[in-house]
Image (tube, rainbow, N blue to C red; front, side, top):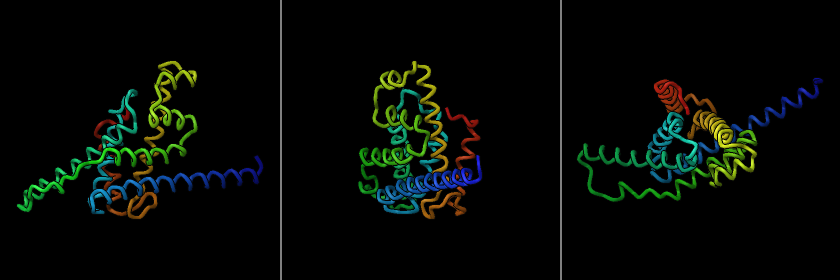
Length: 214
């Protein structure tokens, strides 16, 4: 390969890397904005977002081939928000400021959560290998029957499961990169305390379960 071709390839790779990083930052900010709107407080939103990433990235082993990724991630986010409201109620009771107020525990709208998770995955998929993106789109996002997708791709049941697992692992790595961004500052590998804490918690939790991601 001549120097001109190498330079052109380097430029193309640099542009691709920049485009992927922009998507990672956008996805993080999208979820953060949703949580700020939902919870009404940036600090609470940052705490819930951190807990969401920690749980998703350290509990990937809970995700089985029969599960729909979008639904699983939505359940995780819904659970983290509910835990936040419960903890908020306990703190309020301890300070004797708590009153039976339904506004403290607003209903969690499943459609809102499904939408934000779907938007997150929709933006991340194009950053993956085309083959991985296609199988995740069909099997996990739009919910095509697994046997139909496998038959269309010319895969037997075992080969399909392996391909789906590898696709999900590729997406997991993208989510890991996303959690290295910061909802406040945007750029990757942010040095603010919140970003450091998120990375440290994920590393600690991953080490505690032996690094098993299913």
